Image (tube, rainbow, N blue to C red; front, side, top):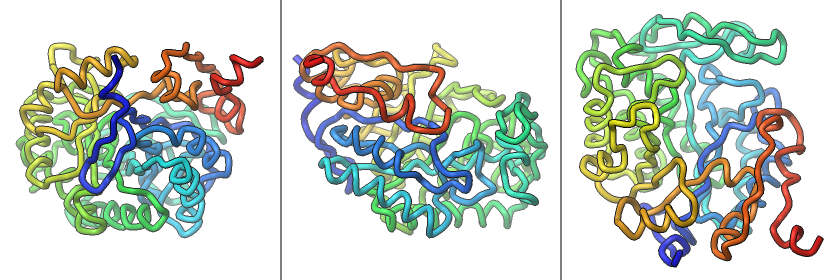
Length: 360
């Protein structure tokens, strides 16, 4: 039992020492300017036994910042901060990629520097509110609709961010294509009402994500680039006229680029969609499966050929030694929900190893 999960594999140029992947999780522990902190290096280093870590979504340039204390990958200071993170993970034999996350219309002028506006494919405000450290809960901004030239500039910024990520020591990058952020805003019919080459039918709405992937591939090698998708996702006030068909189109186009992997989440928002089957049929292999797995169900999925690796999010929060616990069948600790997004090390770096529990 549990044989495949702990065997090595390879996604493009990205080598995995096992098939246990740490999923990206926004934790809001960066400096106010987006510079990664020493406690972030400690946090990721603690979890370096994972076959692959997908570091939390980082904005490629400040227009794409969504949250307070969210890291960026825009400045030399960001690169130096992330280098501490990647060094800590590599010292444990792990691999780590950075998720590139442009938030688009999800954000607030109370978070971004003065004069920096939120953007989107169309000038449609998202319904909902966001926490700001300076003014509490605020409505999402009314976004500026990107011109075609501005769209192409945003694509170039994704490529530049990928290059900086490699300069910071990352083994690759992952494009965030879900949760209502910019790539999904282009993909979904409810948020994209453009009539140019980046709007219209599903193939055209997928163009932004595809061109971002291709540009990042040109910058660092397409075999170092991944994509995360969640068919049916309606988070942050997005929806699509036919999410299954639209995501299938994007998957097919991404497969033609020969990217390193597709990180696909179970379609909890729309259970009629079998997201893993959709990915196998339209993307192929090199799939990382996500959402709701434990060691036993992950092993079963791998042995059934549903994917080639499985990612875990909440289990990694309270279990820095998750790989060891799964391999030995040890019980898992539970995380403190109250400290998920607070500043500081509490609820971030103070979860104990299984060995410490056994000897206490």
